[in-house]
Image 1 (tube, rainbow, N blue to C red):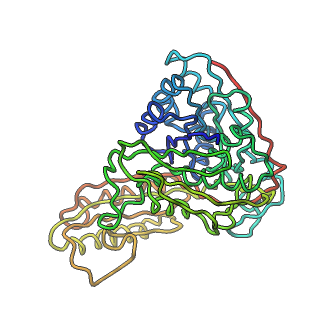
Image 2: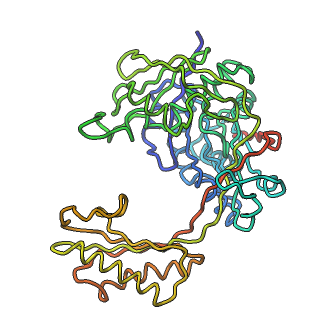
Image 3: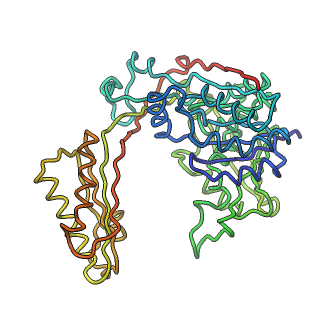
Length: 444
């Protein structure tokens, strides 16, 4: 039976680069996929593109391409990635520059556009899924509107001879389904195979999560050598069945447990996993060990797609100003709490307009809330943060924390402050007919 080997080079924007190089050099791959785009990532990329029309793609794109292109070209490995973010065309041009700097020629790079539906969303009568309010209600704060495209444009770009396919917002599993569509010639209404292709994509999309990263829990789940964690390799057969493995001398593990956790990750209803290409059904998936660090999955199916595409809406939600300072030794908790109280009162005295404020002691009550019966900590880190409408007001928060050095409890040290823009994420649904993918091919 015909099969393809797909390696995952990245499972998120900041992923390590060296495991991808290892896969490109030794993985005997047909495809290397970099999945780097989160919901907020693309909104931030849109802001970067507004500042500079040549920006807006994944900041690590050049470094990743510089690292893997020589081995991929030498070994005939095609690359598929969503590192195009808000600007796939600029990403393709940057990749071409990297290729030339590496002395690589005879390379076809495809940029897939069409996911940016800002104008269509703003001119239509669509509702925000989370609130039921019209999208028009946030029009003045809207930064981006990107539809989750499916796998067909990726398959078409590969059919046109692309060695590298760079997309913006596509569904994560579509990055893996696209190569399968191209390799096997699956029809776009072959729901069982499409559903199994989504199973494969979902298992592989988060990279090292399926090889033991994020899975680890000391004393309960102990995958070995996590500092040398290997990225997954998926072997997809023509009927859509999948084997997940990794390079044999890398850290981590591939087991029924890691694959089960990843299969259920971010899935509300395993029988109806809504995707642009198919409604995937994971409920019949079975797993069996097929050798060391190798799990074979069977089953899985699919049903006709809904005809609607999810759109990720990036919304400006002001700024966060933050400051932190540490206290240690006897009375650390009490001094840290006093520091938080002082900053809260200063905010009120100065009349800094804040949407919300939060003072907390990291390691004591920052995540789970107050728990007064815990033993007195030897050290605490006080964090005070506030959400504001302006950058200037946000910056005042960090300055007030820093002022605690000489104007607060004794023994404060290691003060730190920051200011950052807040991009919220909402969603809406639009008819798939409103999205028109376009393939732009360039040659090196």
